[in-house]
Amino acid sequence: MASEPFVVMAKPVGPLCNLECSYCYYLKTGSFYQSSHSFRMSDKLLEKYVRQYIAASPGPVVQFTWHGGEPTLAGLDFYRMAVELQQRYLPEGWSCWNNLQTNGILLDDEWCSFLAEAHFDVGLSIDGTEWLHDTYRKDHSGSGTYKRVVEAVRRLQAHGIQPDLLCTVTSATAKEPIAVYRALRDLHTGWIQFIPIIRLTTDGGVTPDSVSGEEYGDFLCTVFDEWIYHDLGRLDIQLFAEMALVWSGGNASLCWMAPTCGRVLIVEHDGGVYSCDHFVTPDHRIGDMETSPLSTLVDLPVQRNFGNDKQTRLPWQCRACSWLAICNGGCPKDRLASAENGEQGLNHLCAGFRQFFAHAEQPLKQVMQLRKDGLTPDAVMNQMLAESRLRWRGVGRNDPCPCGSGRKAKHCCWSRRP
Image 1 (tube, rainbow, N blue to C red):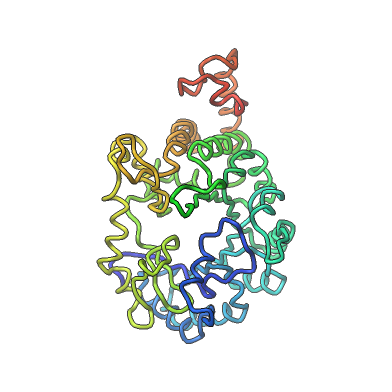
Image 2 (cartoon, rainbow, N blue to C red):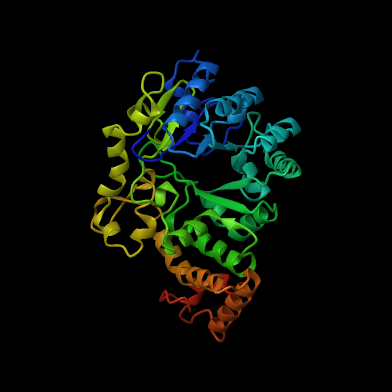
């Protein structure tokens, strides 16, 4: 057993995918292997993985996450075998929680029936509106996939599964927050996760489709207002739920919000073990499951250093920031900017996070208190909306914004007023 709990994301087909999403960071990992390489986890390795992971877990629930590439390309029989192996090696009284992260293209009725019977949770990638989704998420023939993904959502729902919706936020997405949010909301799955896209060019800059900090901040503020005034209690948004968790005294479950990381390993199709999903590179391969147990690899000094670096390499601007406890510098992969004193390692999204946390703190904490006091979500929304309208009464476009930012309303929250 490892010294502390950890999570593994398994990639049974490595970077193989039936789509060619323009922003995908994972497809390039295929270049690390020879052209004749087979990207499919063997049955023998699958058994070793299931056995090792259960043995390393403190229990009584073991969390299996299947990721890609596109993990459904491993085939349905692969997951039938995985479930059988889990039941074989689970100690008495223990259980497994399986999560499949998929683009949904292959999810026919047979797949959905299996996922429902085996109690899989499903995370499904869909980029908001049809035109945005089809701009970025095309198949190998260059065709958009939005309609097929929506069909997958409906098919999962028909089998009793409400998938978690994963939506990337590019520079273009950030310009349409209401349309994107409502398109996702109206699928009625109950859970949305936004994933900012930040990609580097060969010369170290960011690509044009990358979302800027300011764009991401505006996007989050607009979505937050729409949610808190109209959809509270009807669906959850991952970031908002994590903020409420931290502000209620809990620990963030998202690795990028925690002080340190390094407890989410990647097991590739060939048994290679890597530090993090965003660092599947030869430099971050910490070992091989065939020769070293997962419980040993996760506690190696190199992996502990990787996780601790998230905290020890924070620039002074982060250490002095009033939002440190909820942000902790964000994901190391996004620390591409310079601090105010020129120190390297500031998060590319820093300005946007600071804008959003300042915007959301008071209303979210108020919601938490009102819910604690016993008010229903509808009653909370009515009260919040009435208070917001009162704050905006008599405020003109050129007046100071009532949010307290010091900016003119037209340059701040004017477009988000109720």
